[in-house]
Every structure is written in structure tokens, then in C-alpha cells.
Image (cartoon, rainbow, N blue to C red):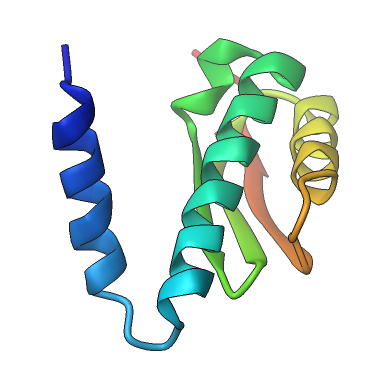
Length: 99
């Protein structure tokens, strides 16, 4: 089990590596990504979350990875657009049937 302080430290390291954003924007982007992952788990399905990568920079969210149906792709994009502070969603999700 990951300890909360370890998770916070890891996030701080990731935030420190992004020089194109202010510290506040970096925190906002981390919150946006976390909220989107949470919405994906509830709206699209917990098993799909591990197949979807969420990246947020200055409120612009990029979804990448694979889903097993066009409906899940649409639900993932819709879930991302409903999160506060999301400026735009770039949907790079691919539809591929699971083996």
C-alpha cells in the first residue's frame, strides 16, 4: 500500500519538472487529472481507467489509450469535459476490442 506522504512526494516531483506552468497551474492540472480519473472510474468503468492516460497542461486535457467500444470513448470524453477548469479535451483514445 502506498503511503499518502509517498504519493504527495511523487506528485511534488512531477510538478517540479514542469517549467511551462506556474505552481498554481501545476496544482490545478494535477487536480484536474485526478478528478477525471475518478469520473472515468464511475462513468466508464473501473477496468477502463488503467487503459486510459490522462494528461492536463494549462487546463487542456489529453486522453490517450484504448477503450473497447465507441460508446466508452464518447463517455470518457464527456466525463473529461464536465470537470471544472478543463479548457479543452483532446481525445486520442483508440477503439480496440479486448482479446
